[in-house]
Amino acid sequence: MTKVSDGERNIELVRGIHESLIAAGFEKFRLAAVNAKNWDDSIVRLPEAVRPLMQVIDPGIEIDTRHFPLPFGSEGHWVGREQWLQFWKTWLEPWDEFSYEVSNFDSAGDDVLMDLAITARGHDSHVPVEWVLSQIWTVRDGRIVRMRPYGNREEALAALQQARGSGSDPTDGE
Image (cartoon, rainbow, N blue to C red):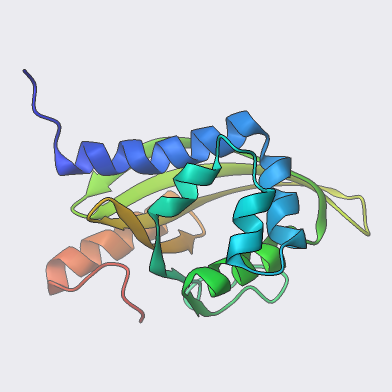
């Protein structure tokens, strides 16, 4: 029997979340996030097949974009499921259409590095947008505890390498 490493298990967890959201129709997730009153309401609004996946989002989840300002006022630091939902609301509300593909998964300890190719169309402008970026998702004890976006894979790899060299957590704030 082949033993699965923690890194492989973490990759499969992160990949599984994204593949399930994409398969269920990411637009349904977008609408659930945008229209939800709170975390519990967002879960109810999700497709049934996706609901159990949200349980792997740790109650203390962090999204940290202080090092990489995103559009629409998405620069900052969000902690907890309610703020996780607020981040996604802020990020997804300005779009009429939003889809993405994930690729190039790699792990470093608790961290999973992945690339995203986003395709979207602005709600007011109707302008199509294509964007490629990378994210580091941190997994501890089978739960997603942190997500950080980067402008590209090289920036994300540099953050991981810097953290390894300093002995700190690569996803801690600057």
